[in-house]
Length: 116
Length: 117
View: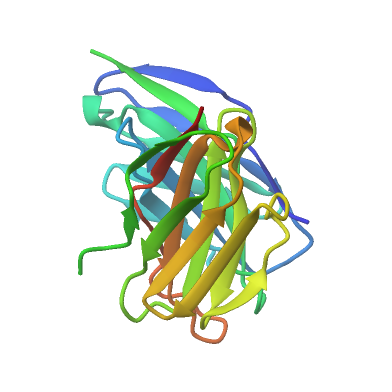
């Protein structure tokens, strides 16, 4: 079974600064997807960014980028130019590409606070 | 598209009562997931359907929980009888899976916050 570990329960960053959230995972598979989801106080789960394991290039979405290290099974999220609206819980998640195994396995989350 | 629609948004019920949570997935999506979120256990999968067929229900806590997907546009999660430990936020999510591709990701509903007193 796959597991996802987020070792930072809480992080804080000054507005406009850069912060990196860590995520490691354990799997015996070679083909999978990785995600970062954001959950603001409204509790809506919002997809931030996704990475396909077969792609070596790190995914980017505007101010959000990942550092995907497949051999190390590491998938960190970097948020540049942090904004007050970035304050939320951030969840790392894993999904197999195996047919019939579509579920997302989530980490325990990192609560990000933005300091004005 | 209005996204994944869940109802009700909040539910407060007394212990022992039956609770039914509802979900309408995004039109065209062929997979539907029910997740539960608690402080103690985080986000955990309860069950998921593909083409209306339950594929993995290993996360369903016990016989008090049941889920159905009678058609591609509707699913229910029922708890009978409810207990205080069932208090949580229940999310429904849907996605489109094509063979081994996964072009559009998951879309989550806004969740139902269930409180059993």
